[in-house]
Image 1 (cartoon, protein in one colour):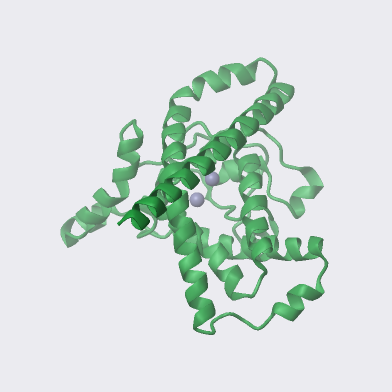
Image 2: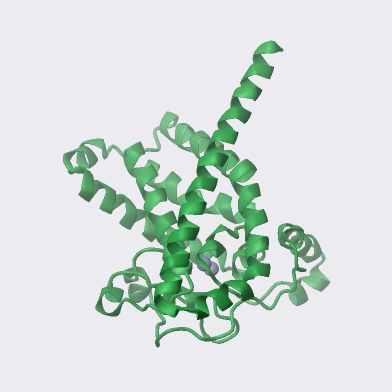
Length: 287
Ligand SMILES: [Zn+2]
Ligand SMILES: [Zn+2]
């Protein structure tokens, strides 16, 4: 009993330490992106930040819950799945290949493969049965760097697939973590309220304007641009769309209410309602 209590306390202490360092990182990101927005848009960036305050509050609640509860649980699920895969011999014997590469190419390979898996995982999240959970991420009508934090726990669990596949491909643990780190911070950049298309670099890299089109509502271009870091996958598989900076309205058709609670409940409401075949057609969006 005492052992259980002390391990629960150790878990909570660890969780609190993780939360503090996550809050520190978010504060740094907030300063960096506010400075960037001011450098690019001047005083308009202040008006834009004010207009986004309501959406930012929802993102803050979801982010806090995510750091405190969801992220530690997702980490446990990833550890469990990767250990189970290793114990059952489901990991490719590629360790010599990975260890023959210097660190930078190893990290690049992990990010490239992670982004490839993420591209298809994200396309799957737009299919009708997974969309109700992913719609939460798309419901932010004022996209900012912080919108990346608006993820339903079910959606976050789905994103764990990228790491599990990398582990099954034999990538070293540090490269799996590096993939998460690089793509997470690049994710902040592509959600930032910046009109950048990256010019010629956009042939290879995803840009904020490109991802803004992904979040556009009911216009040509919404449902395009699925990858996080590289634009090459969208180009290769016919989902690339970038006519220029995106001024289209953002968000989703679904009404989830204003607060974070409505966002958390939305997919469960849809899935429960869809159990009734008569209502299924009306509730679930067409693929
Ligand atoms: Zn999406
Ligand atoms: Zn997004």
